[in-house]
Length: 221
Ligand code: HEM
Image 1 (cartoon, rainbow, N blue to C red):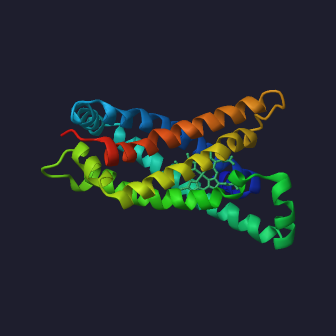
Image 2: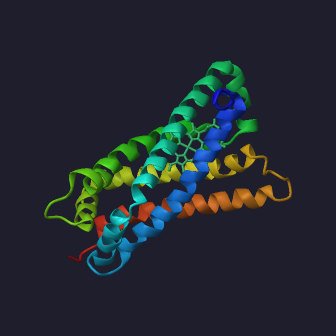
C-alpha cells in the first residue's frame, strides 16, 4: 500500500490518476448522454421515466455511483493540485512567453473549464440526482423535474455555457489522457486528436441541446 501512495503522489502518478479517472468519466458521459437522449422520445416523458425507474432498481447502481463519486473526487483534487504545483514551478514571465508556443487555449484553460464544470456538477446533482436517489420527488416524475429546471432561462443558460466549457475540457483532456499513457505515436496521434474533438463536440452539442429544446421548442405535456 505504501508503494501505491508513493506512486500516486509522484508527478507521473498524479498524471496517471488524472488520465485514469478522466477516461472513466469520458466513458460514463457516453452512457449518460445515451440515456438522456430518451428525453427526445415524443411520448411525454414515458420512456425516459421508465428508463429512470429501471436504472434506480438495479442493485449495481449504488456501486457504480460510489465509483463515479470517487473518480470525480480524485480527478478534481488531483487536478487542482497539479495546477497549483505547475503554477508554483513556472515563473510568470516564462509561462507567459512560452504559452502560445507549447500549448493551445484548451490546455491552458483546463483548470477554468474544470471549475465551471464542477460548479455545474453541484447544481446538477442538486436538481436531479438528490431527488432521484435520496429525497424523492412526490407528485412529480423525473421528466417533470427536467421540464421545470429547463423552463428557467438562467438555469438553462448556465447549463449551455457549462456544456460548451465541458467540450473545451474534453477536447484537450481526451488527447492528453492518450499522451499520458504513451499512446502518442506520431502517425496515429492526429487520429486521436480528431476523435477527441469529435467526442467533445458530440458531448457539448448532445447535452447542451437539451435545455435549448425544452426552453424554446417543447410544447407537449
Ligand atoms: C465529466 C467531467 C470531466 C471529465 C470527463 C474530465 C476529463 C479529463 C481528462 C480526460 C483529462 C486529461 C488527463 C490527462 O492529462 O492525462 C482531464 C484533465 C484535467 N481535469 Fe478534468 N474532467 C472532468 C471534470 C473535471 C473537473 C470537475 C475538474 C475540476 C477542477 C477537472 C480538472 C482537470 C484539470 C485541472 C486537468 C489537467 C491536469 C493536468 O495538468 O494534466 N476536470 N480531465
